[in-house]
Length: 262
Image 1 (cartoon, rainbow, N blue to C red):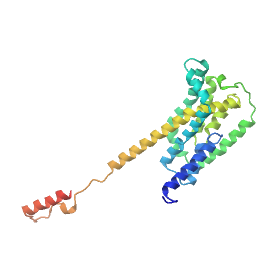
Image 2 (image 1 turned 60 degrees about the vertical axis):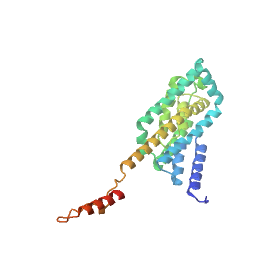
Image 3 (image 1 turned 45 degrees about the vertical axis):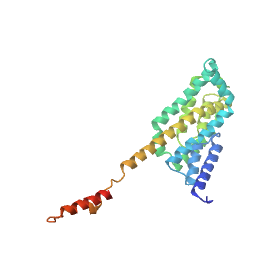
Image 4 (image 1 turned 135 degrees about the vertical axis):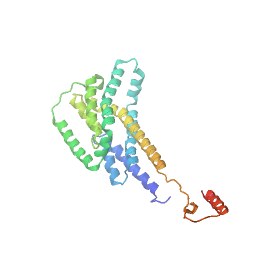
């Protein structure tokens, strides 16, 4: 394979995109927005790439599961018997629901109008200003640990996560800021944001894969319906000129040649 073959260049672009995802997923900047801008600079774009940008976030989700594996195993083991584990699962479900509903309702419109470099850059600036405002405001802490959260706290964080549907807006930043506004400690807000990322990234990746497969099926169906219908050669058209009388034997031989050619 040549050093400049298209496959090698494609793999290098995918590697760069993976590095960008790894560097931006766990800090309060938009990983999706940086992936879109990086893909635009690398000329790595298109509908399939959009699905790729969402699906590679599954790696970040697996990293979260590995980091908090003890907590996840404990919650799953005691989910049916322990009140704290049940409350934790319920809070994750409550926080996940608003973004899932809004994503289904307006996700297509967001991709059409906002999935572009200029709106993403503007979202970067606005997100930075919101972070500065959050750090400067006075705040009180009423929830030290995520086990002390109520469903109202989880719902507030869930609504904050809806802002991350806008490309260029960080999911981790919106959820951490939402937790701080709901008077969670910084540690509790950060941990809950990480736990909430697992169902959110799984759902986003699965939904994008579903949309991508549906677009491919539609494209394949459209290409089949638009396939040109083979026509008989012009030489096979019977002579229709007035007064032309082709002998019967000649007509039979001509029809036989047309049948073979068809």
